Image (cartoon, rainbow, N blue to C red; front, side, top):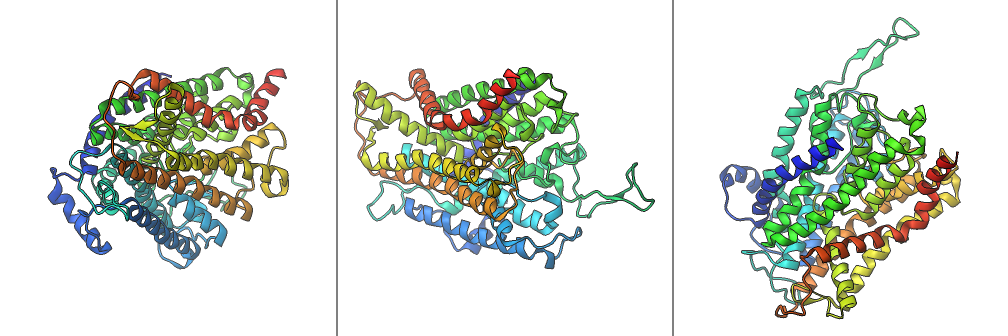
Length: 568
């Protein structure tokens, strides 16, 4: 827990100035460095044929988002299926099968990075450097763009440009999608990645275009036997995978591999990088909207849930019934230890990062339960932008329910939450259990589809975790599944898309609907959301919606496994 407190303290200390800078970037106001950054940004705008100063209505904004995803996803899919015929392939990686290539493209396109392949063995340097790292830079900025546009619609942004709106005439534009991606990518994420990759290289993380040496192991059975040590520009990918809440590693075992995570300092830096930008986005929300108390509400709720989650995970790994079993260290890196692995597991699922420094399949049952619940909430810190977007859904539902319980008209900033908005919120509430439980039930009912390595309670957890990871756009996995099959590739690709696009677009639509309404004056009967009482109400809403509706599945999986171990 000392490491956790250090990480959170550093994240808050660095996140506050970074969040304020990020708000200035998203506001589009003149700032220092415009001339230098403009040398990169202006050619990109000309290439895309867009005017960054023109504000969009929500429908145009959403169309631009979907179009950019369609184009990038198609390019990545083709690249993965043809990589063997392309340059920068020193390890002779073969072409990917169409369904595996599709899953990989959708996974990285949705800022998930769920991997059904063994990293270095099945992807060329070209695929890693352009297809994967390129998407790892762009997709988190897409989530940030949608979150910023939603904040503009819900709360208004001082000095925001007035745009054409949609066909019904919105009161103000929601910003320009292309500018909202390019500006933070060029001015925030890429400079941070450059700095972070240099720091990782200083710790011994490889940064080379060479294929890697062949080493002769001590137990070689023949004089000429050797083991290929695959290298590459690993540091750059590790930097963006952590800072961008991406999670896909260069190597199949991710940050448990010493080449990705060689020292205690590199482990601390990567742990900090997991939460740094999600924390900064919370501070950005307050600075962007001019509502500091709103940022305090969001930060307080997220931090409370974060501390509870991390504490339970570390406690479980230290004191669960299986802790006396020497096999507890199975699947964990001895250099790091079980508790540091539990902390990483908690933070990587509190965000949508999904990187691992231990195999989650080997975690104690309650630690696995914590990771599952974190992904079901998907807004403790969440992904860059997408976590804040999901939190706004909980906020709107909390306002609606609190208004009904107190006999007041549900309203946010004086604008009523009425039937059209509630219908869209209902879609976002019902979609996760329908997708997650439906796919889990199908896979368990037909064991040949899952290829499960464990027929007991843990087998339920393995399947449930895989789909929860896909739906939450997290990307970590329990493994133990035949997840490179056609069933897993296609079903997870569907879960990835359904977990990403409705959760980003529908809150934007709700924000635009509320922005068109006339704001009623604030009075004694107005519900004040920026209070500790409402924060507790909001935490209760999150617990009910994200945990209780999945409680039967959780009882059949990690809870039953924990009780079975305790009884034995």
